[in-house]
Image 1 (tube, one colour):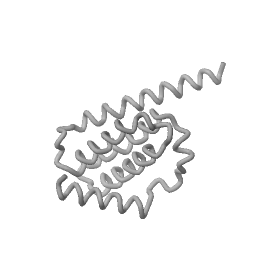
Image 2 (cartoon, helix red, strand yellow):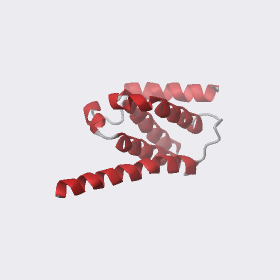
Image 3 (cartoon, one colour):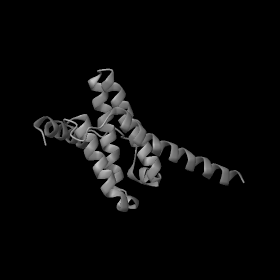
Image 4 (cartoon, helix red, strand yellow):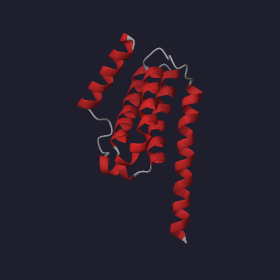
Length: 136
C-alpha cells in the first residue's frame, strides 16, 4: 500500500467519522433497499467522482468519493449482504486503489461505469416489476 493511498484512506475515514455526508439517511432506510438499489446508489457517487476528477475538480471528486465510501460502509453493515461481503469489500478496495492509489489493478473509468450501471439497470427493472404487480 503506497503512502499516498494510506494517507488518502485515513483522511477519508477521518472525514467520514466526523461528518457523515448522508446526514438524513438512516441505516434502517438504507437496509430496506435491495442490494441492486444500494449498489446503484454507490455507483452514482462513484460515477460523480470519476466525472469530477476528469474535469479536474478535486474538491467535488473527493466529496463524491467520500459519499461513495460512506455508502459502501453502510452496505457492508447490512445483514442481508452477508453472502456478498467478499465482492463488496473487493470492489471497495479496487475503488480506493483506483481513486487514491496507483491503480495496480489497471481499472478504467469505463469499467467502473459499466460495473455500476449494471446495478442501476437491474434496480430499475426490479422497481418497474414491483410497480406492475401493484397496479394489477
